[in-house]
Length: 132
Image 1 (tube, rainbow, N blue to C red):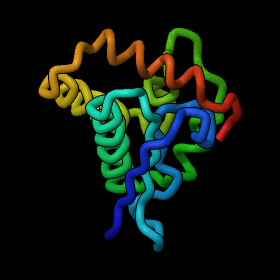
Image 2: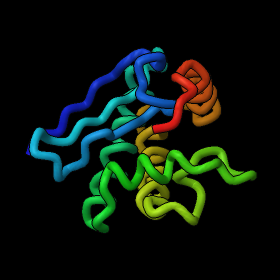
Image 3: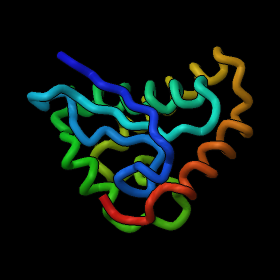
C-alpha cells in the first residue's frame, strides 16, 4: 500500500479545505493526502495525520473518498464549522476520531490550539471557493 502526503499552498487545494484525500486507501495508485501549508511544519503534520486517521476509519467502515466528497458538497448546516462535524454525514465518526488524534498530536508538538486554529482558518480562507 502506498500513501502519498503532499503539502501545498492553500490556493492549490481542490476546494475550500485545508486537508483532503482525493484517493482513498483502496485506490490502485495508492492513497493521496493533500494538506495546506500553514507556515509551520508541525501544523501541516497535524492536518496530514487527521486526514490519514479519517481515511483509515472510513476504509474500515466502507466509506470511500467519493462519498466524503459528496458529503462535503452538501450545504453546511448552521452551527457547524465543517462538514465532518455534522452528525448527518457518513464520515462523522471518522472525522471525530481524527480530531481527537489531531488535538493530541498538536499538544505533543507544543502547538497552541488557538494559534493553530487561526492558522488553519487563514489557510482555509485562501483555498478555492468551489465544491468538491
